[in-house]
Length: 451
Image (cartoon, rainbow, N blue to C red; front, side, top):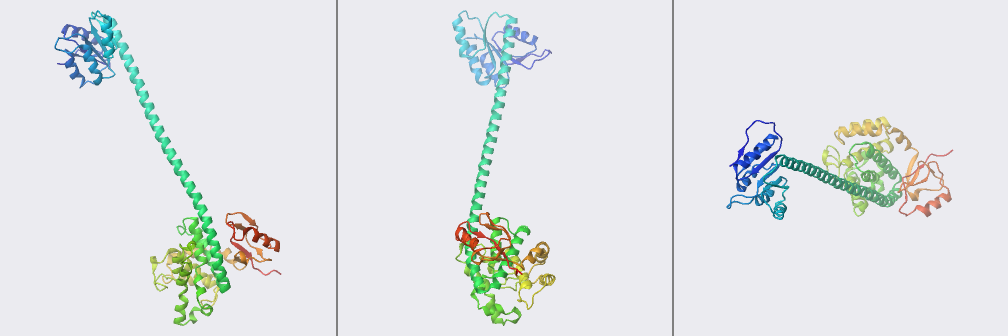
């Protein structure tokens, strides 16, 4: 049975469990430690004390007599068991041992802080208890510091792991970026080689059509930069420009006479034959892996917003976005630089004609954005088209003047704008760059007549 002191005294935040089978001893211990302000709990046997410990795990000191009744456990045995419930409690054994060796054995087995012989000195016992509590508190502080350091160490370890993980992820992203850049260069190299071959065919078939394709590609390059969301990566920008350049490649499969007649003058049969060029363009690129992303774009660049286009009559959102924008650039260049619609339009009238096709050929928003974000801000570049022409490597002839800086596929400057191509320069370019992985790209020359 548990007894607690009820006398009002200044309290210390420490609890002492006193265990003895003699009431006089318990009374003396309670009186002593109440005097110093400790909270005292008493028990009359080791068994009773163990049951108390189950609900008082925050005990600071346990003081137990060694000898109890013959049918009860010894004090040293109780103190030994108490370690499982209150491992950091200060254990003190009261004993009448006269054999020092026997006392030492009990102290060691039960991890007892001190062994105190009866009769004890109150002052000495109080000092032992105070010393034990101080050691306990210091040990608890040390344990708390250790736990704090451990938690910090775990936190730092976790942070370190996260940083290492982020570092690995960043390294992977950098490696992926480098790989993407390598792939862009590699694929662009293939683009350029295959493009040159196809442009050569266009040049041989119809030089005017090849010039038209280059101008459409120029508008695609500008649109890729200024129209939000149209091209999200550098690779897509290259692909979109290539789609503009090759949008009419299917026309090399048509009779040239069909291309020389304005649309208004074509018979229904001839018009249908001419419209086949969109499907033919897709077929021509079918086996060229470098152009797999633009085949469908080329197939549908003559679809119209109201569904009246060809080859499939797609309407509104069914039309691939790139196809819709290429259609605008294609129609605008035909209005400005060909007689496809019976005459050549000046810049204002060409823009008005595009507006008149709102809701029919294109969505209203697309036309307005093409005019406001592409045509008007880049009017100067359009004027340059009158005297700047893009040529492939084989089209770069002696006597031509570079209109823009000339670079390799790896962005290395080769010649500056204004340089005249001499026989020596042409031969050097053939020796160093023709058919090489770092071949030349974007060759623009000045085609103005020199006085």
